[in-house]
Amino acid sequence: MDCPDLFNETEAWQAGFQQVAGVDEVGRGPLAGPVTAAAVILNPKAIPDGLNDSKKLSAKRRESLFEQIQATSIVSYAHISESVIDDINILNASLLAMRTAVTGLSMAADFLLIDGNRAPSDLQMPHRTIIKGDAKSLSIAAASIIAKTVRDRLMSDLAASFPGYGWEKNAGYSSAEHKSALLRLGVTPHHRVSFKPIHNILYLKNK
Image 1 (tube, rainbow, N blue to C red):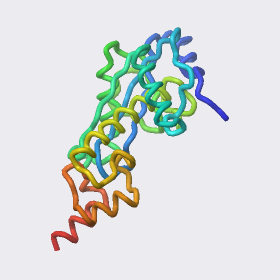
Image 2 (spheres, rainbow, N blue to C red):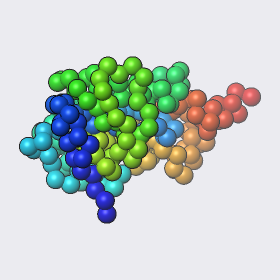
Image 3 (cartoon, rainbow, N blue to C red):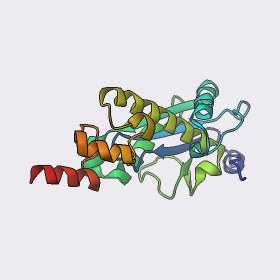
Image 4 (cartoon, rainbow, N blue to C red):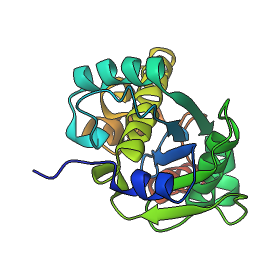
């Protein structure tokens, strides 16, 4: 199985860049909750073992790696709320989350490795987009672990205030339990009303 490595980071270091940050986001698809991005500058001398695309890791392994990344790296993350997603659309909200995470780093990055094929349009530093970067770059893999862990924790917290939707298990994605609860319990303030399933429920309710 292919695992992420430092190929892209090493190219940037050899080009003279020192603070290379991996950037990733999670939460484009859910019906509820924010979209979350993280930026991570790894310490080349203290990279946790086992970094990988967060989707390929168990929750327990993600939690362990989350703590190790926080202890050894420069980390920033940002949530963009449901209301902003509805206002500017999910793509623009994802790019805003990435930009906000990058600007929140306690030490400024001078080069970015960004998961996917789109980068925020107004970045002030050199960058490279990498499709499926969380499976190719250790820095992006670390960012994916941070973003997923903090978002999953947030959705579990919200689940305590809005029980019945299963957010502690489905993280706001469109599971059978979540869809059933929407019909039974209705739409919450944390649902994305611009997303078609939510929009349709509200439309039928207001007819």
